[in-house]
Length: 178
Picture 1 (tube, rainbow, N blue to C red):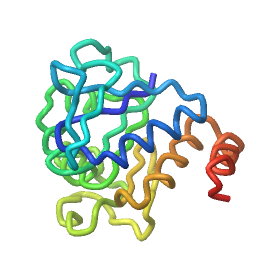
Picture 2 (cartoon, rainbow, N blue to C red):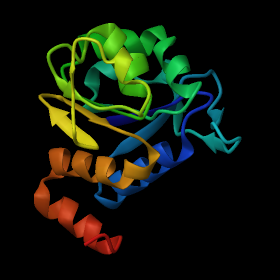
Picture 3 (cartoon, one colour):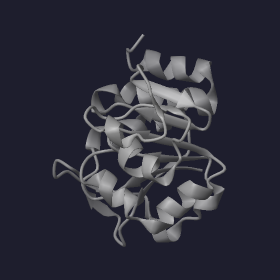
Picture 4 (cartoon, one colour):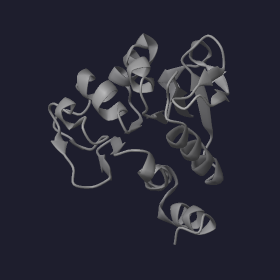
């Protein structure tokens, strides 16, 4: 199971476009509210109804954990103990975009020794990592991306990792990206 987390203040483009592209690739992605309610307000006041809430999922069975950015969305993700505990013990892929690599993953030490990227201006928080020149980068089991303008590239990289190049190319073609 692939889980995509929604916290109050999440970046709507990063969350919704990523979920859309993964579902186009027939990846079983579940959106998860970190709240007790499935309705989560985005950074631009777009309320989104998540598939479930964090209290109802077993994160130890995840294939991938996905963290959209946005502020204060990334800060709210970082303050969610069940999520941070899962990230620290994850035996699966981890993906984060925008502020989340810097605000969530770096403080947990998950990016130590890895190449990573984040939203411009947050690079000083990527302690322990090598800042990438790329807008999307995968190093080991961790994928990071710069921000909302690169969401399609980010999501297609996740499709590549989970379903291979052919499926990613098929989805990109259907989106008129190639």
